[in-house]
Length: 319
Image (tube, rainbow, N blue to C red; front, side, top):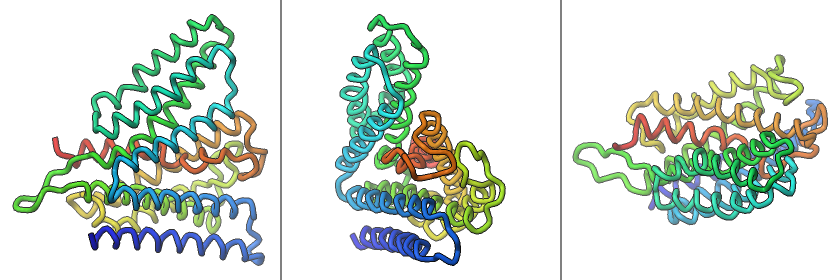
């Protein structure tokens, strides 16, 4: 129990530090900071307070944590569909997407049925959506419409569902020690979300302090190669201090996995930014105006979660 509260205290301390940095940046007129960028950072920190609450719940009620992630996915999918307009012929397919495939994915996660939840959406939902839209009789821009629905379901539901799925991985115990239980899984989720938070913060700071070479100006005018590389390396180094919270056997596993999380988080942020700009949800040269709400909060997690889950499952989990 004491270890639980120690982890929670660390998470709260990190969030408090991130909040203080955001408020400090807002008041630094002498630095000539782009206030829209600072406010975007502060919005992310506010969202991370919510995920901090999820961590608290995960230590005591894993299935409630899964249900909360289901709610986040539902809301993110709703935003995704809102910014990618659909036609009348898609509505019945969307009904199944929202009220069957989304809850079913998380129910299977809550019952740790990896064999089904790993294929439910990429196989069965993929086929069902195309067939259901075809049965509506509207073939106008068929492939584009089907791809929009499938992409939304994959990004907002399937990929994000691998974050709470970390709560059900099983890890081998050291000889002579007690079996690792739910505590180890809650600590793994803590490690994943905290590293994603730190990666976000480090990339922001590196972008502001040393960013010169923009990765893709039309997609995101503030993300630079210096921010991506510097943020990933810094996050990897910081993860050494949190290695005890992850069930990895060797000291270098934590920084290696943190490096993966940081890179995938950045890839997710860039991809979601490209989707929103394609739909005209971001004004040119800005970062906050017209942002996608929940989508902006989960963009890092939805790319990093499935990769982190499968690497952990393949290399460290019990067979």
